[in-house]
Amino acid sequence: MLTHWFQGTCPSSSAQLPLSSLGGADGQGQMKHFVQDDGLNVFRLPTSWQYLVNSNNAASAGNDLDATNAGKYDQLVRACLATGAYCMLDLHNFARFNGGIVGQGGPTDAQFAGLWGQLAAKYADEPNIVFELMNEPHDLDVGAWAQTCQHAVTAIRAAGAASQLILLPGTNFDSAATLVASGSADALLAVTNPDGSTTNLLLDVHKYLDVDNSGTHAACVTDNVGNFTVVADYLRAHGRQGFVSETGASSQASCVTDFCAQNAFINANADVFVGYVGWAAGGFDSSYVLSLTPSKQGGNGGGQYVDNALMTECVLGPYRNSSETVPSGPPPPPPPYSTTGTGTGIVVTTGTTESASTTATASETATTSDTTTEIAHSGYTITKTGEGGSTRTGVTHKATATATGTTLLLGTGSPSATTTGPLTIQTVNAARAVRVMKEALIGVVVVAALL
Image (cartoon, rainbow, N blue to C red; front, side, top):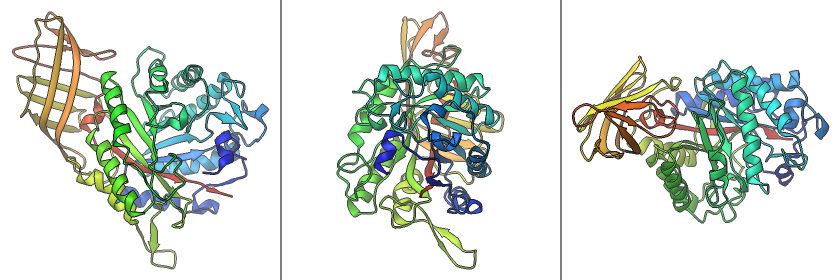
């Protein structure tokens, strides 16, 4: 990433969108390959504020979307949506516009919310859109930044995008190493939907493996498991989830070992990490140090995309080698989620087109006579029928509940659960629970070339 981008200086003329129809890389073909051949199901699509409004003047930050540039970006988004994958709108401005911090002397909260409101209105009817409010904020007041994010969330929901995922980024480049210690996580927990819920509001997390977490060095020095453990523990303690929307490494031997270990850990903690996205493909060629761009074998406009070893071993490998079988093709939109069970057996139903059954083999306890009840499920196997089919083993879910008669209230924002016999649990919580039972979201960043 070029240094000037860290200050949100992203000239509108400096990007070549990764679409062959616009003279760029074949991002559309790459995404089709990643979905159809690899089973990936999410793509991150970076753009800049300047590009969307077609102005490099900070005074124009509150302008309407430029029809030409926003239209070109929309072509990339539509190419992504056509694959059936989730498509992440990434405003890649580092919480700045030409050096001015959003809501802290730069563009106002109202201008930021206005931009996201326009984008949300454009994609309100697309359930597979993910709104990533900002790439890697840094060197700012995190309390004020959380309020800025609140304005954007409110605008997105008011524009009709009522249920899509929204990613909330913290300071210090959104690093997993400091997300909790910096106070970012605590501040962002206070961001809510207009109804006061936190449904589909996820903490955004980034992490590289090189010496300064910049993703600019070929050598890796950590597998980040310690950092992600802290984040995972925090998310569980607060009943929330996160999304690792940017991580990457080079193809050096040390990186292959560490990157694979990191992603295996993320996969093993799918109850709190919805998924991860590798940096990067699209406009990057094979000479880029962190390239995940597939090569095309065969000439004359045809041929087949072939993944590099890093993609095969460390992005796809942990996903395929985890306890959940990778489905064929893209995932359906998230359905409602519910669980019911008595004693040590649980039956899970996800919507009307998929079903699942579970058998508990380890522990499941509840004491409904007390004022607080801890419910733990572990070591059970889920076999799901429906699109693709999948099996997951060893899932662990833990919640603290309050018993009122025969009703268990499963945490903030969750519906009630009724007990009959030893234990019956029923929840409907698409935001916090559905991802545990469905395929993780695994994908790559499809990046524009920098001119």
